[in-house]
Length: 241
Image (cartoon, rainbow, N blue to C red; front, side, top):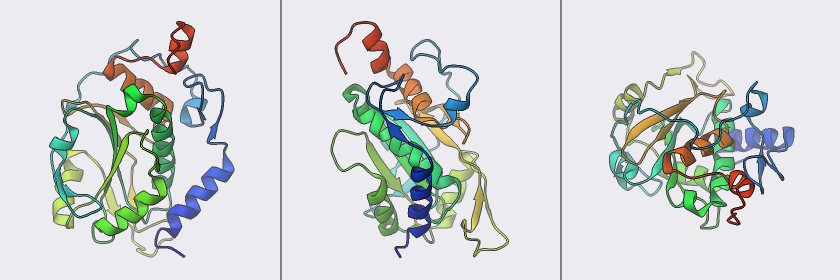
């Protein structure tokens, strides 16, 4: 078994349990993505019909990519819309679900060049003792699309716990060690908080597990960049797809 066996097993279960990607979607003519929005009592608002107020500046930090190179978050946020999730690779609970939602978003955005070039996905581990740069690289290979069309997806970790703790505090990301570190679902308890950050480094939305739906996130990204969905363009007679 690989070191990412919990992730792979959880993803396999999720993919077998639901038709995650099919065809003929209201938000995108090529992909249909299932998610929490299917249970909402209201339809998702069309991109550009609402505003996303600035919540607060996104905190900076010096983190490591999968090759061990250091990056300032503030520089990575510059000139791109960012969807950033805190996670850890040993999680057998909510992190695999979030990873599946992120891969769906990656696929949807990959079919929209005007979005793919302005969007990036960022996964940040809060388990640096285990999630070394090399391990994050291995994790990335299971999730990141092989072709060049989708938005880039960065997998970051910290050199040590002392570095990641203030980052978690700055983003109000709760993480607690479980009493049983050998718990099969992973050694940490945490809430899912995924940040939408604009190209000026301002947090514009925060998604919990109940609101991390790729179609909702894509509409929010389109709202920030002033775009429209493929479905809306079809209704308007715009031939772009």
